[in-house]
Amino acid sequence: MSNSAIFAGEHVVKNSKVTHLLSELSSSDEPGIQYVVVNSDSVVFEHSFGKADIKNNVVLKSSHTMAAFSMTKMLTAIGILQLVERNKIKLDAKISLYVDHPYSAEITIKQLLSHTSGLPDPIPLKWVHLAKNHNTFNEKNALKKVLLNNLKASSLPGEKYEYSNIGYWLLGGVIEKITDLTYSDYINKNIFEPLHLSNSEIGFVIAHKDNHAKGYLKKYSFMNLLKSFLIEDTTWGEYEGNWLHINNVYLNGPAFGGAIGSANAFSRILQSLLSENSVLLGSNTKRHLYSQVKTNSGEEIDMTLGWHIGELNDMRYYFKEGGGAGFHSEMRIYPDANLASVLMVNRTSFNTRKQLSNLDMQVMSK
Image (cartoon, rainbow, N blue to C red; front, side):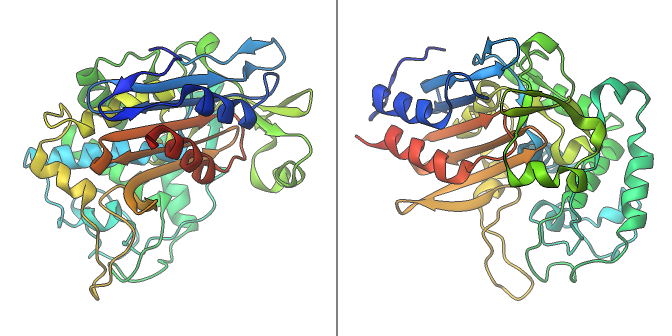
């Protein structure tokens, strides 16, 4: 992929304007930014800027991977919908058929996908372990501990929208129960491999340390003052100029936030979803990704079975944001415009909603 503008249908990228906006968001000696826009069959725009490693003066490239955190939930949603398409599971199936949990026996797969299950959502920033300790980490024990510490539901199943990382963690267990594969193996075999994405581009572990951007937290920031209450002190690295390096961590539940990849890799997943002949989902199943969900009372919420719903200049789009220790990201898909975009940064705090809107508006302007 090139950093220059590419003609794509009716869209012509104003390369200098978009590149200028990106340079304003990250100076050349600060943590960097990756931005990619695609349509169903080509790259519209791609650019990376800033540093992957401040201390060693490593420029961020489009190939560098970053922690995607909650953007992973779309991989989980796609995985579940694949199983629905293959008649391995039904959306209205009770999750208690597949995984043990302390909540209502009436909770369904569909409710977990749309965050209407009523499950609690405690702050998950400490649900991590150092990458170097991953080989001895026990995910099942970690989930049991979280469930025991959060026994009370927030609402009745289907009553209202309430975001829940626990819900998507349980969906990962559903995938494992049905397929007899680990969650990461299933996603690798059924999403990454069909798109010819290698483990150096996306996966659930850091395949090549030299190709993984360091995550940072701004030294003079409110979050840095509160870090002792939010994240484990073992995750703190050293200060590199005005930035605190966050040590590499993996989330305890890969299904709610464990993917590690480049914006380029995520854009290829979105590109397949835009295609009429997606290798990921058939058209009948894919409609669930763009159908607005209702509560039990019939009230529409800004969710589908996976995506959140937004609007930009009267155009509906579907998005998933991800953020955690050292990284922030957001990806969007605009079906009516045949466009999708991904923005990833290696810093903890970043207004992806605002900045991705600004960038996408420039790309879509004629």
